[in-house]
Length: 424
Image 1 (spheres, rainbow, N blue to C red):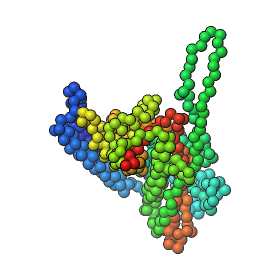
Image 2 (image 1 turned 30 degrees about the vertical axis):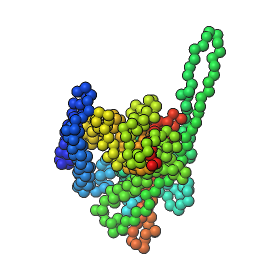
Image 3 (image 1 turned 180 degrees about the vertical axis):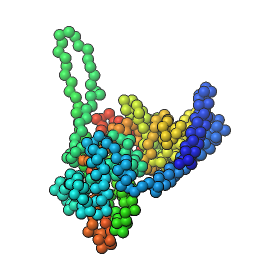
Image 4 (image 1 turned 180 degrees about the horizontal axis):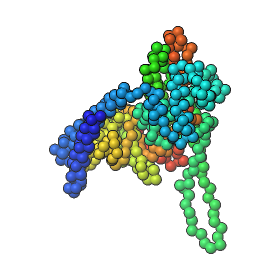
C-alpha cells in the first residue's frame, strides 16, 4: 500500500512536469516545443506510462493481500451489508448472505427453516423461465452482486460510462425518441391563425438477452472445507466471465441474436469520419478535429473518446501544428480525485473490446456516451447450483447469468461519431 502511494505521488510529479513544458510554450506566444523540450516530454511520457502500469500491479497485490488477511467470506459480507434503498432491511440482508453461502455449499437441503423460507422469496421458479430449462436460479445477495459489478467495471469500458436502466421483466421495451431540430418558431400577425407543425417521433427497442458465465465446477472437498472462501472465489470466476462477454457484446455486438453494440450502432447511424488513404493503422490531428465536429455541439459538453489501449499509444505520439502533444496527462491519472488525462481537452475511456486500428476498423468513438443505454432485467445476477452434472467427478457446478441488452438512443442527430481507418 505504501509502495502504491509512492508511485501515485511520482505520477503527480511527472504530470506536473509535462504540463509545465506545454504551458511554457503556450505562455511564450503560443510557440511550438523546441527539440530539447519535445525530447524531455517524450522521456517523461514514457516514465509516466511505465509508472501507471506499476501502480496497477501494486494495487492488484494490495487487493490480494487484503483478501488473504480478511476473515471468512460470510463475516465479511455481513459486515459490509448496508441498506441500499432497495427495500431489503439489514436483518434480511444478513439472512440473505448466510442463506446464499449455505446454498453454495450444500444446496437447499443445507439450509435451516428460516433460511429456506427466506430463499423461497428469492428463488426463481422453473415456471417463470422464458426459455427452455430444468433448473431455477438463486438471486445473489448485495455483497456478492457488488463484486460482480466490480468485475464488470474492471474488465469494461462500457459499465459506468454509458447510460443504464433496469426493468422488472424482460418484455420488449420500446424507448421513444423525438427529433424536432428541423422545426423553428415563427412571427405571426394579430388575429392570425398559428400554423401547425408536426413532430418526428421514433423509437429504439430493447430486448433481454441471457448472458451466462458457463459452468464452473468446484471439487466437493473444497466446498466442504469451512476455511475455503467459496464466496470470494465464485465472485472472481463468475464475475470475470460475465464481465468479459457482457462488455464485448455491448461494444461490438451485431444486434441480431445479441445486443446492438455501441460500435455497431454508431457505424450504422452513418456518422463516421474516414481516414485518408494510408491511414490503415494510424490517425492524424485533423481526423480528431473532424471527428469532434461530426458531433453536434449539444452533445459535446462532457463528451468522451473511447478506444483500445493500443490506440492510446498512437494518440500519445500525435502533435499539433506547433509540435505540442495532443495527449495531456491528468494530475492523478484516474487513480484518485483530480483532473483526468485528456485528448484535445476531452476525457477518454479505454475499452479493449474496441477494434484495434486496421483497414476499415471503427477504432475511435467520440461523443456523449450516456446516449448508449444498457438494460438490466429483474433484480440482477442469478446463480445455479448443479449437483448431478458433475457428481461422477465429485464436483459441484455453478453458473451465473443475467439478462441484458443495449442500444444507441439516436433520434437522428447522432450523439456519437466513429473514426474509420482507411481501407487501403
